[in-house]
Image (tube, rainbow, N blue to C red):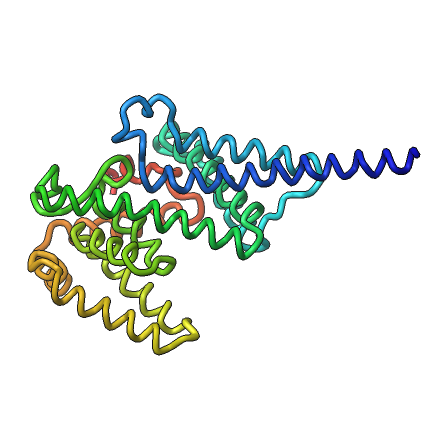
Amino acid sequence: MGAEQGQAAGAARERRVITKDRWAFGFLVAFAVAVYTVPAAWIPGLESARPALLTSGLAAAFFFLRRIGRAEPVYFDGARGFSLLAFVALSALSVRWSLAPEVSRETGMELVKLAAIYLMVVNVVTTPKRLAIFCGAMVLASSVASIGVIEWYLNGEDLVEGYRGRWFGVYADPNHMAMDIGLVVPLAAAIAMALAVAAVVVSHSRGGFIGLSVGMVIWALRERRRLQSVAVATAFALGLMLFAPSSFWERNETVTTFEEDLSAMGRVWAWEVAAGISADHPIVGVGSGAFRQAWPLY
């Protein structure tokens, strides 16, 4: 009788652990959706709720409860995970020598959050089914951001430099927007992919376009179904040629005459500043996030 009760208690405990694991995965998916849809920026009443922070916090809580319930160690993803943790630790320690300690402290905290999300993903998204659901949620949610960017661009709303599309929140910077939305292109298909590419195009981000093109080439080379990859790549190229505005091509052509473009030269000057910092502080730098404060010194 005692053995049967012990088995029943063990089974009940296992069910609770599995339930916590499912909740952790659900809130992690909700976090990915919140990051791409930015609901607090355009749905009244949600700003104070901070959906991204709330969902990531709940995902972390259920994740650790699950680990405690099974007394399981956290998987750190080998060399990649430990390299990430070493980088985060260096960022946190840089407060001690930073030119702007408060900025470095805030940057370090942001990196801690990003590392925690990464570790949750590799510990919770553990099956092909979950990976498909998580990627699918990212793709669908990114369509909301893509549509927002395209709508603002077509309406001429709040364009950067008068012609570069953007959207709410973290997508207010066209370059950041292009990188974040371009991330889903290798995962996306059909309409979501078309919307993501369109959003990158209207951002007029040269770096975003280069990253998108490189990503497409790598995907095509790694794809086992070569005919399908060639067809998608061809459609991608034709779509750009037919529908990309002339201003997009004109901005990308300035890469060959970057000396005449202040935006491009800004990158060159930033590299020169970074080179000077590396020469003076080759290992520790000037503190996490303190690059702007170092600019006038170099």
